[in-house]
Image 1 (cartoon, helix red, strand yellow):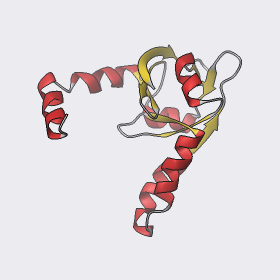
Image 2 (cartoon, helix red, strand yellow):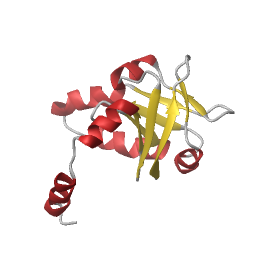
Image 3 (tube, rainbow, N blue to C red):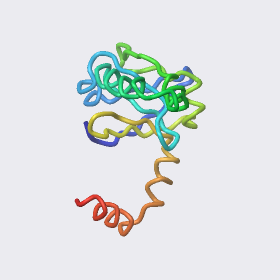
Image 4 (tube, one colour):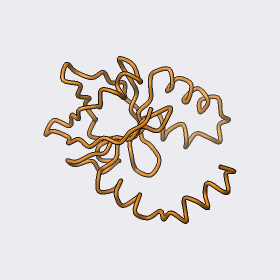
Length: 136
């Protein structure tokens, strides 16, 4: 899954989810809080695998389990829109313009302004250093 797509949230909290990403995720998928104040989008199978790992963690990981327990299954409507619940819109600061990004095994939904700020804070040197530290 890859790509970057610009969309807007309507007054009912719905956003058109890109066709390419819908095809890769399947008919229905799971949306949940993500890192860096965005929303993570998983296929149902991907979510089951991810949350299965979290659920198997010892009790000291309860905070992590709680963070990811606020998730929602969704299916796009006939126009390809998904409803983002108010709690997730609030968590990610989604108001109007959003950027949807494919990240390989999942996608993320960002407030466009936050996405642009996040990307502007990382220089080419930062990226090169991170890649070097990871052996890429």
